[in-house]
Picture (spheres, one colour):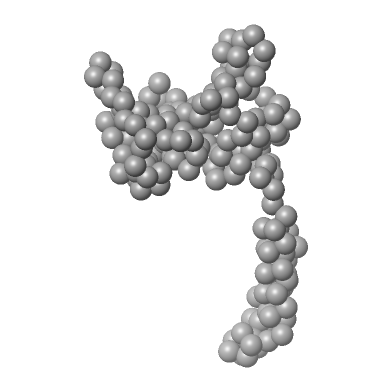
Length: 181
């Protein structure tokens, strides 16, 4: 908020009857620029791995793969998959990577899966731990509680956190398109 006020003040003082060319070289704008640069660099340096600052209002990506990616963009982002498994009955193809599995249908991403009992996930470019408090802070209460996990819905996308029914530990996480499921 302070940043916006400083920028607005700088812009208003530059246009209040002054020569625009002189205003560009003026000290107030230089001060605003320095303050903004200092604040930005201090915020970047203080970011931790669990950098979810507020609730997640929509689900764009998980593991840097989005639900609107196609086969080519997945390979461009993640590289050559370790394995490719095609289900001839359903028509789905799954690309296995070290950190995620990407399910494709008709050349478009249908789901992104993180398995092997993950402790953290990367949603919308931000890492978050899969601890209850972190999930509550980022996603709020689950929209649906299933026998095998919790579901969080944002528009046409959802994240399901699969839990072991015996001890409640996280055993996998899916980002998927609710329309296609």
